[in-house]
Length: 218
Image 1 (cartoon, rainbow, N blue to C red):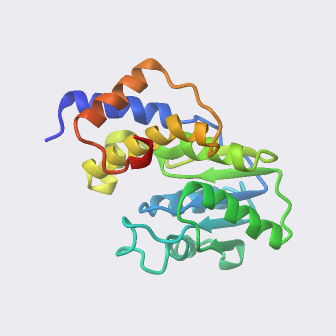
Image 2: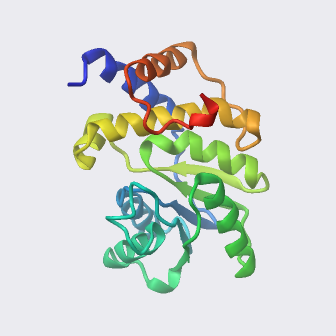
């Protein structure tokens, strides 16, 4: 049973991860692979609004997705976007990335190989990983102006869509930890973390929401 305090702390982490960028036309949209097909849905919607002429879906599989997306996250995302009306010719697939850093680096390499000029990019992620994805992209591809995007929904709505509250909280805690430790390792730009967010993270860790932590960083 998840306590009221745990939900309050989770809400603090959720709110902090939101970048509150206004989606606008960009050179390309990059959809980051994950367990959440909603990223593909959001990417398709942004494409249909005319906000980018080209999509890159990036992602292999992980322990969370190997059963539900056996052909790879990017491949399943492409199929979903095509189902939603995106032309297959407007989608590039990067099938090898296994973390956010690889998502950015491998997508960059693919776009350079395809000779696609990129000055701005819509970075589409899960709602609770906007800030983590943005900080990573800013570090690894600083020449690009990044605009964060995700499905517009509340924490409660997102948990209801995933049907696994524990997984969502664990993932949020993992995303928060990476924001705090990865800048020191050169993986992303530094982000100022408010004291109440840091305290919420510590309480959730102490209460056992630790399955997605980077163990070597603990």
